[in-house]
Amino acid sequence: MKIGFIGLSHLGLCYLAASAVKGCNVIGFTKDINYYKLIKEYKFPIKEKNLIESLKKNKKRINFTNNIEELNKTDLIFISLDVKTSANGTSNLSDLNKYLEIILKRIQKNKILILLSQVPPGFTDSVKWNKNKLFYQVETLIFGDALKRALNPERIIIGKYNKNKKINSSLLKYYNLFTNNQIIMSYTSAELTKISINMYLASSITTTNTLAEICENISADWKDIIPALKSDKRIGRYAYLSPGLGIGGGNIIRDIKTLIKISNQSKSSQSLMNSIISNSNRRKLWAVKKIENLMKNFKFNKICILGLTYKEGTNSILNSPSIFIINYFKDVQFFAYDPLVKKINKYKNLTICNNYEEAVISSNIVILSTPNKEYKKIKFYKYKNLKYFFDPLGYIDSGLEKSKFKYYRIGN
Image (tube, rainbow, N blue to C red; front, side, top):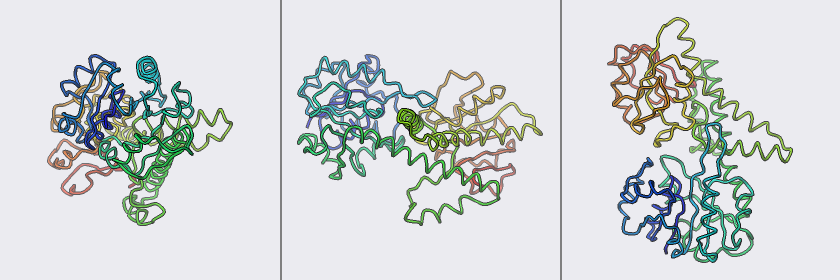
């Protein structure tokens, strides 16, 4: 089979690579000429586990183009552009709409289109294309584990115009390369399914953060409680039970904001969504409040931060807890190290260091914001300058017996 992908951001490249691994010939299109020149030379600005290796390994089956009409030679065309999300969780569909304008003008009308991009309910139905040849696929990729999930999905959720009609044979053949577990529904139901998944994840994260905060206030230990919860089949071992500094990234908050908008239009209750956002904003202040309390008795103007991204395994800093802290303490100079982030010009009070040691020796305070295997190897007890260590996720709370500094984590 020959598969086309329109839009080569994180979403498009991961599914393109997965299709090539499964033996399909693929063509990837971008309208950005500068980006096209980069990827033609296999220079990808996207950080994702095993992605670049898989693209290079399957190079013979992959072609990148700046001419969208080449996709008329394919059996299926996926619209796979990541929708940009602002820091406050608002989607910007302008780039996606520009791609759709190009598609309407230059793609043959008999082609099968599958919309992978994250869109609000009602969007797919508004696309001016033969509805019998237009589908919406719910993507459930996770940064840092995206290619693995694209290759081995738990299920594929498909939105179609008439859910009672058989799915197109070419599309079914393609999906069967990945899994036979396919769930068919209407466009709107599929679009809302994507949001519903993130809503349940957000609810779990919020419950975990709330209970971890209670643990801190009553001298209980959240880490002791986690095994008991994971042994309960109604909650399970895959539950989101690790507390954190609010909800990072853009997708979950974006979908909650979309639900708030829908609830407002339909006069439904917004209380649950508002409480999740409120809780997330509150938890972002965990490290801030601890530091402010220290400032009352301990004078300092330098802080070391290990990890700048919003989560492990990605180079995205959107809604990152570290960036929130850097923005909050504008009079403090931050020395940061993150193996996936080499340059940020936006913040005058931020110096990005070349290695962790350069960052750690810069201050009496360390905040380990984003986990990374490299940090596990650091012998922090050897740094005599350290007086306070903030490890919100409890990433390195073992092997610290020799340490002289004060150690903090969420839920204790």
